[in-house]
Image (cartoon, rainbow, N blue to C red; front, top):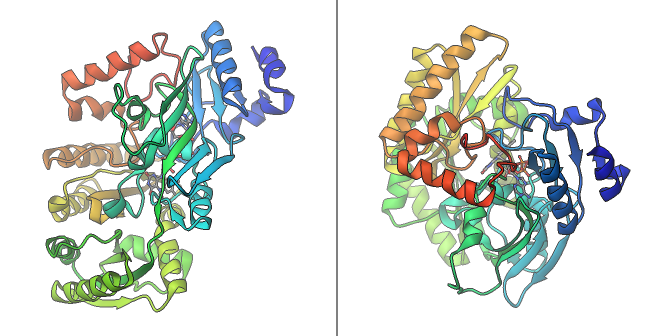
Length: 455
Ligand SMILES: Cc1cc2nc3c(=O)[nH]c(=O)nc-3n(C[C@H](O)[C@H](O)[C@H](O)COP(=O)(O)OP(=O)(O)OC[C@H]3O[C@@H](n4cnc5c(N)ncnc54)[C@H](O)[C@@H]3O)c2cc1C
């Protein structure tokens, strides 16, 4: 097959030497690794289609890959697979300021999508912490969220259309630039969050918004975790929807500060980073009100960022939470158990207790406004006993999130890492429905097999 791939794509777009394959044998998820058979870099949808037809003839699995920043093992290769890496499809095809839309190939970096919209005076809100390196195709495949999710939603809310190559090589165009369109099933939505198991996304039509005219950032610190959770409820009860409402626990604060030196208060038990945006008058009013609410709900300190530069530094510090924690121990396992906002305080307490019960170190940060927590295990995969205890704590955390009406994953997807928990969340009939959809679109189970569920 390798010779055919070289003929199809050119030698420079095919890797099959073992040392070239190793960088594609893992993603950002701890522990999971599998060297693929070959890695290819198509440049057009037709090339993607030709690769899929060829792989199908050889019965070879195909694993789509963007930048490999996934946190559930989604782009970890299946044994003997062709890794189809889309990073060379990195062209922004069009920014349409009249329709507030952008067409971008799947390999465009999320940051480049944001920047291109910004240059046109427009705004692409979804901002995963990894946006400087993740691809828009990966974001669509994971339905990624970000720091602005509370007010602006997640990637799905901005996908108006997709070009998708199916397992049999057919190229389908789903959706369009119309604000309203109810012709047929909303097939594009089936592919958002499908983790490369139903088709390969080659191009995206994205919805853009007018750029908010003003923004203000606040930093509130707490001596008690509960008080931070209460602040979130109080802000929402006041009918204010900040665009960002992020939370860091004490362990995360200290690690981030040691790494970024932005001046975070290292003696705080918890910290909230809050951002409001919109019309300047509304932003000023909401920021003042939030300041009062924080003071009234037990914050030990609260302040407004002095200027845009300080706001940017604080946002960058928050974005480096994962990298900062990853410096502490050899293995970092980041989860994303998510609960309704009203259950945040209970969930955080449970995570702390689970860590103590099983003698494992867990730092927690996350998108508090969305109820989306990232309990992060700081551990060592070579310590089998500790890994067993991590596994036990993790199981309890997922079970507790479900018992509170939550989900095993708010944004990172199921992939390999969480597939053992999926049936419990969905129940038998929904779980079987997923499989029926998969069998209809990929009857030979060639696209990212073994991810999300076993057929
Ligand atoms: C430091 C850090 C911070 C992060 N912060 C966030 C965050 O705030 N919010 C969040 O949601 N996630 C976050 N993530 C997770 C990750 O960045 C996202 O899941 C991202 O969308 C993955 O993009 P990628 O290009 O790296 O995709 P990959 O990791 O390469 O792939 C992810 C999945 O998508 C599939 N896929 C990739 N491209 C395509 C395509 N074109 N067509 C079909 N399937 C495809 C793959 O098969 C795989 O299943 C973070 C990760 C890191 C390391």
